[in-house]
Image (cartoon, rainbow, N blue to C red; front, side, top):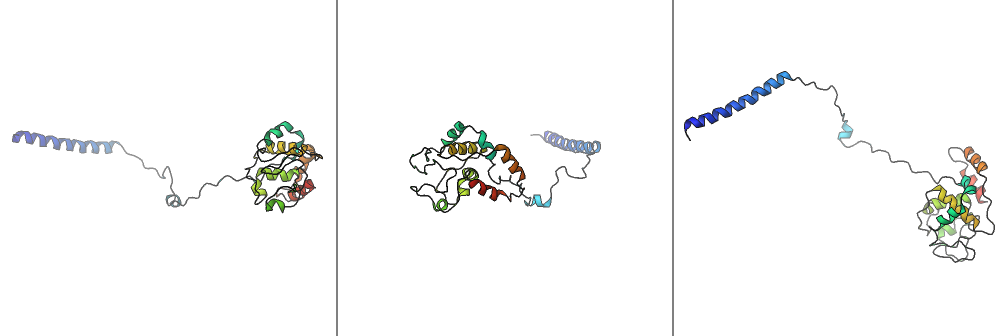
Amino acid sequence: MKTMEINKIVAGVICAVLLVIAVGKIGSMLVHPEELENPVYPFSEDIMAGNAEPAAAPAEPAGPEPILAMLASVDLAAGEKVFKKCASCHDAEKGGPNKTGPNLYGIVGNHFAHKDDFSYSSGMAEHGGSWGFEELNHFLYKPRDYIDGTKMSFGGLKKASDRAAVIAWLNSKSDTPLALPDPAATATENAEVPADGSDTAEGDEATAQ
């Protein structure tokens, strides 16, 4: 390659570099960016350090919804349909057999561990009390929470309408069904219960009796 051609290449590279520098200078003179006084996304030291408090988890319901006011108006056919979830472990006909769980005929209003020919868990056998509407409502909501050590592995019925329906249906499977609560009286009683629930125990005891 001749010296003249090399000089032309070098001169071209130098001109290109000078042109880039000149364009940058002219651009900075024409454009004046304004810096924000505060950042758009503020970051505290705690957040940058990973010490931000986690979002609070939604509160768990304190317990099952009351069902007393529903009992008088539920469809017993709906209760029988709900009971099919229990039928693999329980029979509810008079004189029917015990299965994995005891026969449930006459369960409503009867005492806990009511079947003499069934081997209950110690938690159930030693619980004491009777299967009133409220007791069944709490048990069917979360069996293992209500009776510590129960053999019943059922996860529970979360819908209040399902619990009310099956409890009313079980109440009908008895020689002496309990009288269903008056919805109007029940609504009044619920309204009079203090927010702290201090009268709940007395109400449950009255129902069991």
